[in-house]
Amino acid sequence: MNIPDRVTVLGVPYTVERGGVEPDENGTCSPSTRTIRLREGMCPEEEAQTYLHELVHAILAGLARNEEYEDEALTQGLAIGLQMALFP
Image 1 (cartoon, helix red, strand yellow):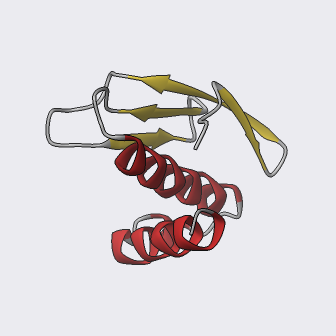
Image 2 (spheres, rainbow, N blue to C red):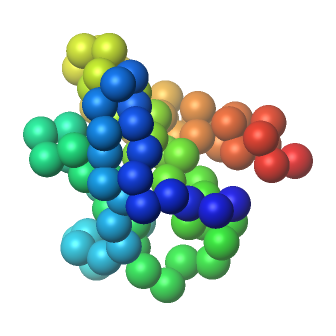
């Protein structure tokens, strides 16, 4: 999967960066700074799943679904489902 440097989520532009995450994290999404960050050095499949995971967070934030935004099980399930549907 080719991960873009920029993505628009519900009309809001986000920058996608590599690095800048805590050592125990694969990625982060910050709606306030409109940034998705991915840990460097992941294998392509892990990077794609992490990108989709953070993208789901951005979508939920854009929909003002604050409770679901914090739900890691829901977010990860949607990311895995998207990855399997888009990249079988």
